[in-house]
Image (cartoon, rainbow, N blue to C red; front, top):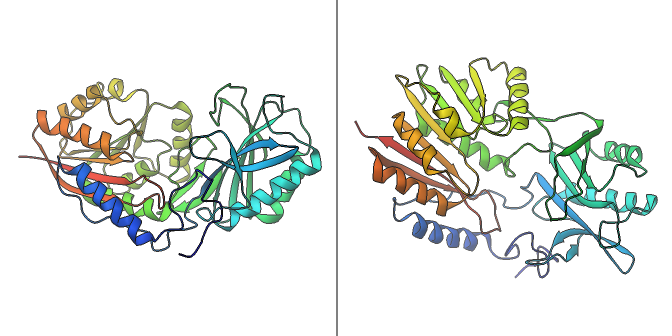
Amino acid sequence: MVIKCKYTKYCGGCQGVNDDYAKSVTDKQSSCNKIFEPIGTPENIVTNFFPYKYRNKLTLAFAELKGKTLIGFFEEGSIKVTDIDGCILNGDWAGILIGILREYISRFKLRPYGANGGILRYAHARCVDSKIQLTLCVTTDNFAGRSWLYNKLKQNFNDVSFYLNINKRTDRAVFDKNFKFEYGNKYLTFDFAGVHVSICPSSFLQVNLPIAEKMYKKAIEFLDIKDSTQVIDLYSGVGITSIMFCRVAKKVIAIEENQNAVSNAKHMAKINNAGNIEFWAGKCEDMLDKMKPADDLVVFVDPARMGIEKGVLDRITSLSPRKIVYMSCNPETCVRDIKYILNDSNYQVSAIKPYDMFPFTKHIESLVCLQRQV
C-alpha cells in the first residue's frame, strides 16, 4: 500500500485516505443500497475523477504542547490536536496557509486558547481559484500583526478576504455571532456553474464544487423546469440553486431562515441579474403557509443533516407540486422523510442518485426525485 498521508494514524479529519478509492466507493454503494432499500434502488454513485485536493474548506485548530504551537485537526474522538503541515484532501493551498500561520504565530508571539488563557482558537478558510477567505477565530481582537498576515496572504494568493470571529464560547463551536471584517475583499468571489458566487465566512458552500455542480444540474433535470414553472427552493442558503433555477423557470421563491444567508443571497441575485427570485426569510413551515397553489409547481429541498420536520413535509405535499427533489447529506433522515411522504400522499420515487461529495469520509450526498401521480 502506498502511503499518501502520514497523519492518518492520528488525525480525525478523514478515514482510509491511504486505501484504494475504488474500494471505498464499493463500500459506500453497498451502504447506500441497504439504507435506501425501503424506498427504492439507488443508481451507481457518481464518483470523483481525482478524489484528492477536492476540499475548498479547511478548519484548523490550535493547541499548545510543551511550549510548541500545534496547528491541525482534532484526533478522532478527542480534543487533542494532530500537528500537520498540509492536507491531501485540501491540496497545496492548505500547506501554504499553514506555513504562513506558523510564521505569523512565531513572529508575533501569539498563544493558542486554552486553560491558561490565549487568543487563537481556530482558523477557518475557504480557497477557490487561488482566492482565499480566512477567518481567525479568537477570544479578542486586541492582538498584533494582522496587517502583516494579510500582506503575507496577498503574496501567496490571487485575492484575499480576511475576517476575525470573536469567539468567547465555552464549547468547541468554531464560530460565534460576532464577525469583524479586517482587510481585502468583503466577499470570496468566483464563478461556479454559470453563477457569479460571492459569499461571506458564515455562508454555506459545498466543499466539493465539481461534484456539487453535477448534483445541481441533475436536480434541474429531475425537476423538469419549464418556462411556465414556479420553483420553491427550501433551505435555499445563499441562493446558488435559486439563481440556477431562475434561468429556466418562470419564478423562484427562495425560503431560508438564516437572515445573514438571505442578505448574502440578495446580494448574489443582484450581481447575477436574477430578477425573478423572491427571497422569503423565515421558518419553512411559516413561509409555506403563505404560499398559494400554482399551475405548474415544483419543490427543491436541501435541509441540514437532521432532515425535515413533518409539519414542513405536510405543507409541501398540500401544495401538490408536480415534482419534489430532495437533496440530502444524510441518507437515514432522507429515507425517513421520503417514507413519510410516500405513506400519506400521491407520490412515487422516480430516481435515487448518490454522489461521493466527500471522498475518504463516511458521508454521502444524494438526490431523490419524487413524481406526483396523476
